Length: 78
Image 1 (tube, rainbow, N blue to C red):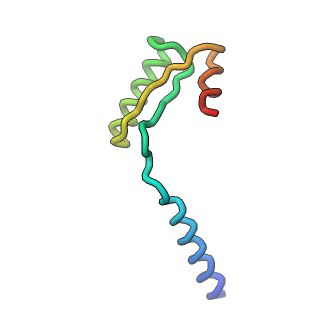
Image 2 (image 1 turned 120 degrees about the horizontal axis):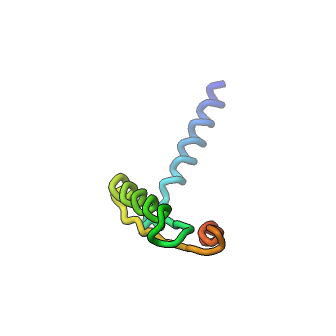
């Protein structure tokens, strides 16, 4: 039983080390708003970007991708 816990702990420690491979984020965060600029969704997106920027201390860029009834934004993620 002790061997099981020791092995599990070793695997867990090695696994968590893999998550620290790079600094995050290494480039500006891009917030995609799938509707045109100037609308209510754009205003909410820009306010969310301001909050994220203040909390994460990282630059946040709002990118509007209008068209296709909001379908272009999710496609941009892929």
